[in-house]
Image 1: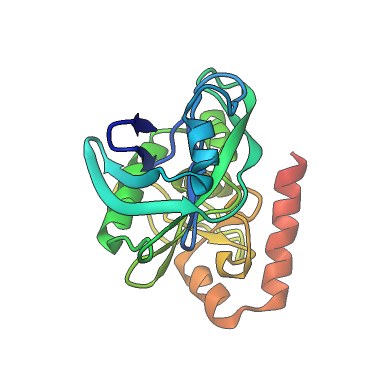
Image 2: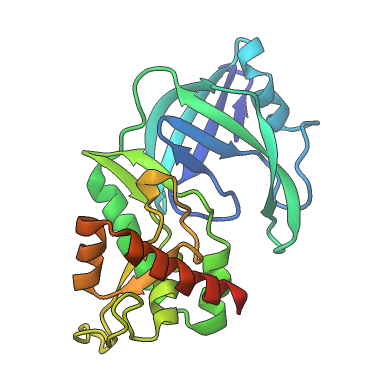
Length: 246
């Protein structure tokens, strides 16, 4: 956050890529994390208080969204859409702490985003996820938010966490978790080709977590979406229960 007394304004920056501040979009509402990189965040002597009181003052609050290093997109003026609340996140030293979350809404228009921007971000994070293996990948995937961001692009887009997807495929170890057969082919990097699938669909309120995500072959992935068969879902749920018990 950056405050200007000269213009009576507060400028906010949010990143589409997760960092120490786990901001997330839910439709047209941005759940924006307050200031403070270490320890519990407070509402005293910082811009958290300014933002907390912004609906009761005449300060103008502006939002920029960062999609890549030094590339910011001006979103416009925002206002609090609901009462700020607290939740737990990790600080810069990986310690659990309380942060303030500010639900924000654009005053004019919706938070539309070019679909190619989302795809570009997902491709970058996919490459990063592929570099991690085993426990390191599992640890990063477990830190993913349980609720993925939902953004309005050309169509409604669920911004999935690439580390969750990569871990689910690695955990499957080259075997489709629905048909129990080896992946039908290897990708260009020589890895068994599987796709990640949310057992409870995100569009139905499912969580973007490692215990709602499996690795399946392309054929079974299509089957799951076309047939939406209860017995298939129950089989995958049993697989996830075993994973969670480990």
